[in-house]
Image (tube, rainbow, N blue to C red; front, side):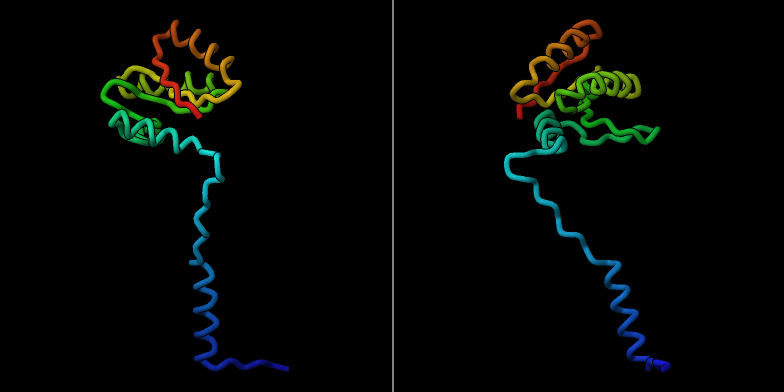
Length: 130
């Protein structure tokens, strides 16, 4: 059996298919009590009157760029990555390096490690409490 579609039926089918491609995903809500890195980054950077997600020529992004600092925001357990990125962003922008470290209960050991290196390489630490 051969199915023959009329022009109006074909148009309706094509419109339905096209609309399915433009269907928007529902906005993901932040789970209660849990915040994402972006939350801390935005809050801190707005307070410091900085530029959020400042894009460098190599397409990397400084989490927050102020008049004085190139700041990398990271979770406490990623303290070492934060150091590397902050130093790189500082070199690329001519600003001083800083790490915004998101710390919570039990993260003291990471903060201790960061402080040890930060003292040696003159990296500012901004503590962002969970």
